[in-house]
Structures are given as C-alpha cells and as structure tokens.
Image (cartoon, rainbow, N blue to C red; front, side, top):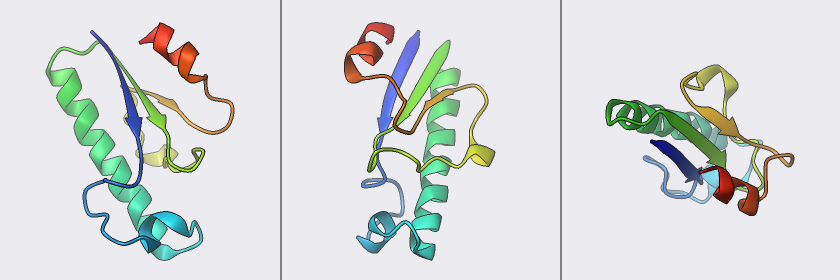
Length: 94
C-alpha cells in the first residue's frame, strides 16, 4: 500500500499559538518544526506497522522548508520546497 500525506504546521500536536507557525526566525517556530517531525515519525511508524510499503510526506505549510532533515524517518520519502511535484503529479503517483 502506498500512502501520500500532506502536512501543515497548523494542527500539529502542541501547536496552539500563531507565533509558533508564522515567524520563521522565532524560537517558537523551531519548536513547532520539531513537533511536526515527531508527529511525522509517529505517523510513518504507524503506517509501516499497518502495512504501508511506501509513504510520501509533503511539506505543505507556507511553501515548504519546515522539515528538519536530521529528524526524517528514512523509511519515508519527503517532498519539500519549491521544486516538489505539482498536485496533479502527486495524484498520479499516490
């Protein structure tokens, strides 16, 4: 089973202030990025345990750039930044 997931900082576990998701220079934003990666790790773990063979995780908050490479689960593929595939391309893949 192939799974495609869109992520957004708004709605991540522990996010409750606008300051956590708006100002990329804020220490609160850095904490939010870490919380996002923790949620993604739990998601990938659960999907793999449930039978997923491939997981693609798309960084959809503010044009991307929110993932922390050092915290990426190597079992997943990460789509981030401006060069990621368009919605149509992703739809055909997953």
